[in-house]
Length: 139
Image (tube, rainbow, N blue to C red):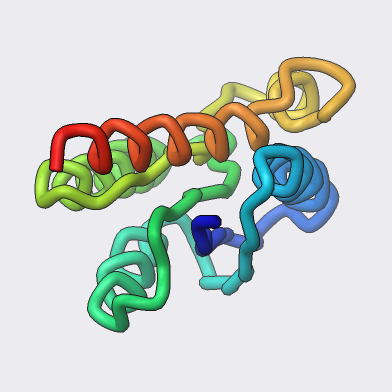
């Protein structure tokens, strides 16, 4: 049984609740345990994963959050840099499922976060578990 850390950027509570529900359900359905930590925003997610990875308490990680385009360039910075940070950690060998949604509006975010619709929280958890299985197979 693997122990998974969910790192959530809790900026939009109602959207994160849906992402968390999907991720937790997928992890539990696969027979694994999980913990959740919360960070202020998507830019902090890679740092939190890196800190947690140093503890050797977790087998894989799920990154969750929502970034909705606004009127400024901030959307691009947050979207690109959080994805870059997560990708760098995966290239270092961590099993991470990236469920940070980047959308144009709240309606798109709801469709992707809702477990009854696209269920991207579950998809991120399944990706983390798939990468964990691959790492174990290749070890």
